[in-house]
Length: 361
Image (cartoon, rainbow, N blue to C red):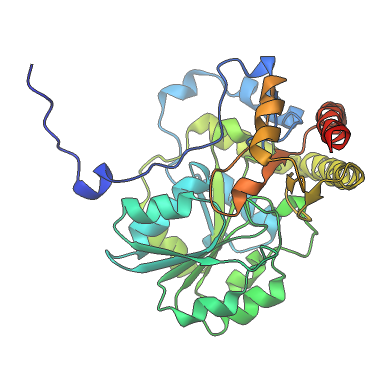
């Protein structure tokens, strides 16, 4: 039999795809703290709304603009509806930003380390991608980005791997002098302080887009809905390039119901922040070193135990955490914040590891 013809575009053939956190076939059999999923269920109103909308209406196409969802987002976040966009997860928004605003060979910048899908999306669309190293403490210095003629800068805030937060004043100072488009990915912002978001700056700056997701704080990874805030001319451009019906009807229903019970989300976010602070304190007491996270996860290492050993040992106990075999990050593991009982289980495992090392030293 002849080998199949290679019909794939050359740069796609060479592409290293984005690899998400490991998804076990039977997630109920493990303690899954590797994908920054919310440990608490979505609002009961979401489940009620889904059950109440399973009807013959599913034979119809959904609203192509997700108009009701956009109106609800505008009300909840107190912005003009023309400044709101909704899509099939924030990853689709990132892809649409490339489709809409990026020409071949345009330069795209982001810090290192950060969410690696920015680089994947850039390479898919034929753009040039360059990362700017964070400092020794993994802090982002935006002034370094002005040394490059970038079309777009992607900034996850809090940062996707480290949990570190750049203050809004630094972001606004950068916006005032940057000529390209700044995309601030606020997937984890609800686990930070209430004044950390910069989405309201999109009313004053026409080169800012802020992306959000229902996956993390709203406990809705499974519905794949993201949203964005930006100047109306940016939103109008995204509407020209999005797929016709990019959010399924029931997914729109679920997202609207989650917004109608935003107090439920905020209460869970507070619980996670409290658990995170307690977990970080316990890590210090066990001799682990961590970055002070503003997300629903903690990046940590032991001064002597290899992080791959920590990762493999936890996996052997059916506890999944994230290990990145990448420069600077391979010294760490990332642990998502679970419930207090889940965190107690992983604390116990880490405590045994740390004690075992101390007894050998």
